[in-house]
Image (cartoon, rainbow, N blue to C red; front, side, top):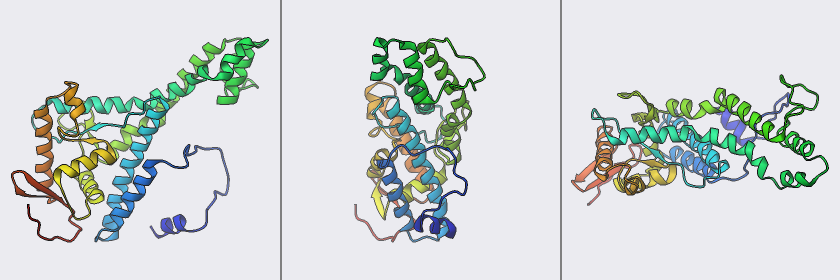
Length: 304
């Protein structure tokens, strides 16, 4: 931990052997700022640093997962916020469980959509259109693909011979190859990370869906709540920061689209409240007044 702090605060440290690798495509992003805000919020709490590390790991994983999904949506041409419909696990099989599974599958497919959109976008490039009026249009388009994707190789280093193939066939082939590789690498990020941080589960279900465990819920409370916060405000903030949908107010779009009944989302909200009460994170002052309390903050009296 001390070495990590020294690396983050000290002079830039370069690898001894430089090599081509991935890159960060944006200098600034709202998700980067959110990670920093969450770190500062957790580190400001009155708790041992080793306890804080557990929350830092979980909340950083959640933010990185969201950055991954947000970036995928943007590349695919979708500017709508990422939505994560969460079921609070109960013995009853509800519509929320099915909806949470649908939400999981939708987000699981976002990166592949981004890969396809990125490769196929070359057809919309102005240089691709200009090539049609050149003396050798197909050669110009193949050259453009090599400049953009470094593929197919000029020296014939690929396993297959693509000479003589039309540019449109090459785009389709590159899309196929990119998606196949994606499934073996980056395509596993959403499923593995969501499981690792306790966001997804297959408990009581054949399908994987979003069903946050106690550890992640506690980390979210520690990051969001400074001292105490009304339960409804907490749900709104969790939706704003992380796209998490628990109750009917946050899932109004789903209710309007008749994907789920308002009563079922309300029951899911009540299940979350009961779960947080059991974890000592919610205090009920009356039937209509509940507060989410940070266990590492000063506890005083509240009137409702």
